[in-house]
Length: 430
View 1 (tube, rainbow, N blue to C red):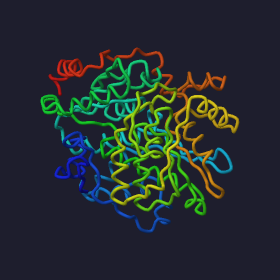
View 2: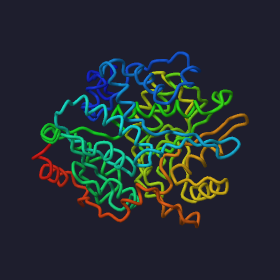
View 3: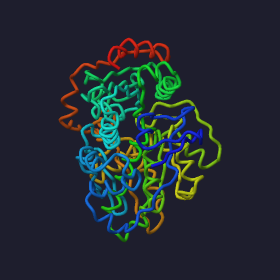
């Protein structure tokens, strides 16, 4: 698999090299130079999830990981289902929260951990990543206890749900968490600064596990095929998929799946009040505003890192710009959507509710809708209970951490403070 840096065409990488580097020169994202079209789509969609995923990823990556290694990686990473549930006559949901941290990030996090541990062959590395909610837990659990890999996770202090924080800030060992006095964009900017800092990059052996890492992105392609496989064959070409969007890795993966031949009619980029992309799709002007805090906190992102990849897919002709529409949903309509879903007998959470609202008001006659359920509603227990006025029981993994103390270190939104903390904490074992 050949990848090119979207900011510097002279900077190319193999799949293995791109996983280890994370970002390219000038903080550029790695992007496939070609996307294979898959043959025999009907037969492919008949296969079991893991078997199909191996075939999809082999088409993308090739034999780079070695004989049998890709199969081993997928079998160990994708150990949980991605079921499709019907919530109304015309609308389905793809539930991506049946993994160990109850969020869609488990697919990419576990796939990356399995790949990286084999590629590094015992060499030390520090995973540095920022999270607006679910990435932190998925990455922390995926890498927890893996030898020679340290993980540093930045998150905006007080701006993610308490249970989200507890899932990754209570592990300890090789997992180091930092609560930043700022928003997610501040955290993301500090991660970028670190990767631009040659001393930090070289001495701490930095790598990123954000959705900017190509391994996480490619893993996510697989569950779109799984979603379509569970829809009746005569509905697939009429399917509109609504993706709750923050950093836009999830939507990027869906568009790659379509470029590979997956049947789908179009996509909706569903955002909250942080509506940079919906406004851009309507006006053609890229005009990020100050990030606004919402109940769908994992989407509180004004400058989504993965957007250049979507531009790349369109500019290179892999997907048509017409297949993509943007919708921004405010807090009032988010709550309304949660209630509507509950009335239909389905308990959801704010991110999925935004995607549901977007698709339910956008279907044309004959179309079928699907929205992505990216996290278990219990991860947003306070919000959901307040909106619905009824209690939500906690799954065991959340109940187990609810009473534990956070081990996170509090720091200002200052890169030099972060750098000092990382060197003080990791230099002896990075």
